[in-house]
Image (cartoon, rainbow, N blue to C red; front, side):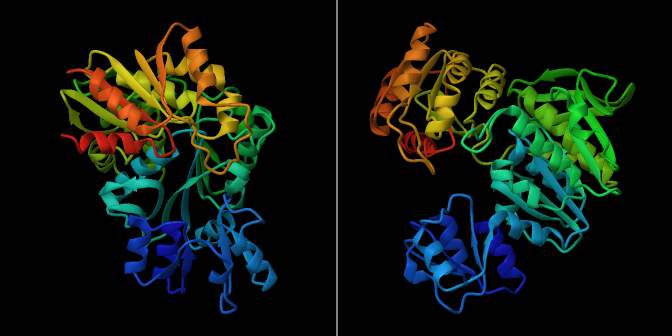
Length: 440
C-alpha cells in the first residue's frame, strides 16, 4: 500500500492513510506530504474522501471500513486499484507464483534498470537499487508482483505473465491445490494475444495451465534442453552464489553469474532472462543486471557476524521456501547450521505441520518462536509446541522459547565461531537478528 500511495501521490492524487503505528515507511510518506493518521479509527474517514482503498487484511468490521460505508464513499480493494494503474502501461510485467515473487521481480527490475528502460517498479520488499519498494518511471514498462491470495492477481492486466511455481498455500482461502491451479490458469488467460506467458516447466502438468492460450508461451527450467531457456553446468562459488551455462533449447547462449545463493534463484533468473529477452534487452545488460543483484531485504540477507558466527535473515514461511533457503545455506561456509523459525499464521502452521518439521530438519539445530498471528485470531488448537513435538519426533535438536529475549540469550550462549544462524519467517523474527548484530 505504501508504494502505491507514493505512486498515486506522484501522479497528482491527494492521498491520505492510516496505520497502527509509525514506521520508517510512514515517516517517508509523511515527508512527501501524505497525511497519515494513527491509529486506524472511524474519525480518520471524512466526507471529502473520493475513494477508499483497502487491502485483503482489512475486513468489514474495521472501523474505517464501516465509516466509509456509512458515508457512501466508493470502496476499492488494493488489487483492483493496482489493476487500474496497470492499464496505463503497455508493457505490464506481472510476476506470480507461490514463492519467489519478490526476488524475481527484483531481478527483472535490476535488468531493466541496467538497460536504461526507466521502468515503474512495485516490489513486495525493500530493493536496494531503488532504495524502497516503489520506483516511478516514465515509460511503458511496469514491473510488479502478482499475488494469488484472495485471487488478487485476477484483477490485473498483464502484458507479460511470469508463473514461477504453483503449490499449496493460503489454505485459509483456497480449497485445495486444484483450486489454486485453476486460479493460475485464469491468471494466464488475462494475457492478450500479443502478450506472453513465461512458465516454469517444472510445475506439475504445466501444459494444462497454458493449454489453448492464444498468446506466446515460453518455458524454462533446469537441465532440460527441451525447454526454451534452461540452465546447465551449475556451480557455486565460496559465497554460495550460483553460476551456469544458459541454453536456448539445445543452443548454448552464454555463461551467467549470479550474486545470490541457491538453485531456486537459478530458476528465478531464467524467468527474468526470458522476460528481458522478450522485451528486446540485450544479453550484456541482462548479465550485468543479474550479477549486480545481491538480493532484497529479508531474502537470505547477511546481517552481520557476532562472536564469530554469521547471521542471515530470510523471509521463508512455507515448507518449500524453507527447503530452498536451507539447501542454499549448504553452499555457504559454516560448521553448525542454526535456524530460529517463527511460524506465520495459525492456518498455515496447522495445514503444513509435518511438512514444516521435515523442511526445518535440514538444519542442525532449530529454535522455535511463537506463531506470528498476522491477520488471524488464535484458534487455541495449534502452537509452536506442536511443531516442536514433530521435530523432536524426527530426532532433531530443537527448542522452544516464548520470548525473543530468551532466544537471544540462548543463541549468545550456544552459537560458536564459524556457525551459521538464520532467522526465518514472515513476521518480526528479524528483530532477533537486528538485536544480536547490535551487540557486535
